Length: 78
Image (cartoon, rainbow, N blue to C red):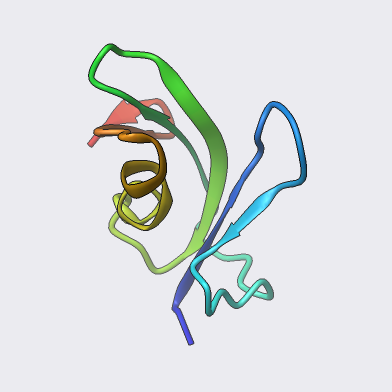
């Protein structure tokens, strides 16, 4: 089971939760994130919890699904 989980709040539709083995009982170390493409367009906003480096939502979801290449955690670029 993953030591972190993230939740994306899309503009339309239900929240997206990951990774596939997400433990949604984790509440520690909450941070907000935004994922961007090469043009600087923000595609996703969400929250991450647990033990993470910060790139997990980008690697797990944003990059493979929509070509996101950059992420901010709590307003700071990683």
